[in-house]
Image (cartoon, rainbow, N blue to C red; front, side, top):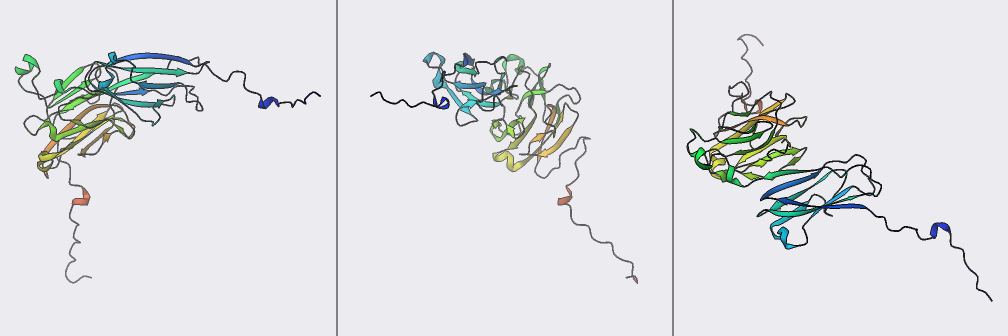
Length: 307
C-alpha cells in the first residue's frame, strides 16, 4: 500500500538562495609611527537592519605588515564600523606597519565605497615646539612655545600669552603642540583636541603634536591642564575664536574650550600665570573676579533719626 505524502506549506519550504553574496573589497593601509583615528563618515542610504555598508579594521595575516607593532581599538565591542558612522583607534608603536581595511556592501549597492577619513592624533615629538630642530632652530632668535598647523598656511608658532592663528581668517587649525619653554617640564602640561560633541582626542604630553597636518581635518577646540609642580605654582587659562565668528574664554584649566555650534577653531591663546592671578580678557585687561568670589555687599547705613 503506498504511503501517504504530507504536503509541505510553501512558507515552510527552504529558501532557494540561503546565501547572499556581498560586495567585498580589501585594502592594505600603511601607517607610520603614531596614533590614528579612522572614521567612517555616515553613508547615505545605509541599511539600518543589516548595518551595511560595513567596515572592519584588522591586522594583516602575514608578518610582513608588522602586526606585532599595531594595536586596534574599535568603539563598538563587536569590531564593526557601520554606515551610520563609527570609528576605530589604531596605534602604531614602530612604523611603518600595515592594517587591513575590509569593506562590505550589499550586492545591489549602487553608491560607491564608504568614505573613510584618517585623522592622525599623535605624532612623534621630534617636531615639538621649544626644541631645536636642525641648524635653523639653533640660529632662531627665539623658540616658540606653541605651534599650530593652519589650513592653507602650514605650521605657525607663537609664545605663551600670544594669539596663535588669525581671528576672522576663516582658516581652521588642524593640529597643535604646546611646550612652555623655561616655565615647566613638558611632562607637567598635557592637552587634548576637541573632535566632536563629547569626543576628545587622547591626552598628549607637552611638546607632542595633537591633531593632523595637511589632511583638511579641523579640530573644534582644545582642553589643557597642568600637572605636578607646575599645577602647584601656576594656573592655566585659554581662549579661542572659531570660523563662525564666535569666541569662548578664557576658561580655566581642565575645561573644554569649544563653540556652542562646534565650528572649527581658527585661533587660540594660552595664558600660564602665577597662582591666584586673573587672566586677561579679550580686551587685554584682567577679567573681573567672578561674582561668586566677591564679598557680599553691606547694606548702606540709614541716616540717624530715620527708620
